[in-house]
Amino acid sequence: YNSSIVYISIDNSGSMGGKRIKNAIKMATAIAVAFDSVPNMDCVIITRTDGAVESVKNRSYMMDRAPMSVKMYDSRVNGLNHLKKMMSRIATPGGTPEGLCHETIFEYHGKESKDKDAYFINISDGAPGTYIITNNGHNLYYGDKEANEQTKAVMDKFRKNGWNVISYMVGKTRESQS
Image 1 (cartoon, rainbow, N blue to C red):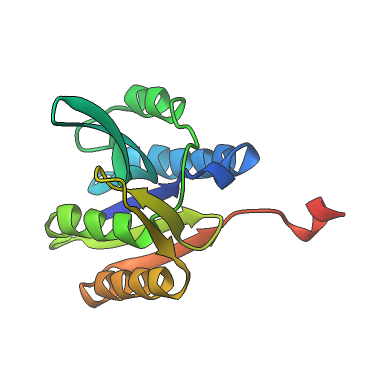
Image 2: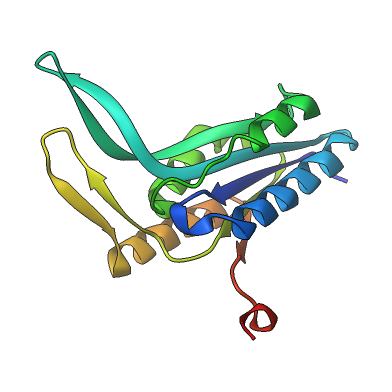
């Protein structure tokens, strides 16, 4: 088999609370544990949402709401104990700035995947959408057609650069609705 790397992006927006985030964590952890036992296979787990970012302007503190990607685990530098510790800390606080965060993931990790089979696994429960509040008080909406098109463009960039893209939609099944 070829040297491989898998990037798992977990949506940790508010709607992912409860069983959804627990199942996403189980899936990501299972993949990471499997990859840990195979040479030349690396795994990176990233969570993404938006959240409050503290900033200082004119000596006063302001809270901005901004897209965030957090690298929770990287098998090249972290052991499985770190994975267990970090997975227990995942919360579901905000919105779904999916494409914005995926763009950042590609920019930071795209070169790492050179000469490897690269996989991007997206775990989410819905379409991209969030409000971004800037430090000057502007409220920007990221969602609907614009966010869907931007997210698709980023996924096309992954594919164009040789990444295999897999998306899992988590949510209610027909059985659980009855």
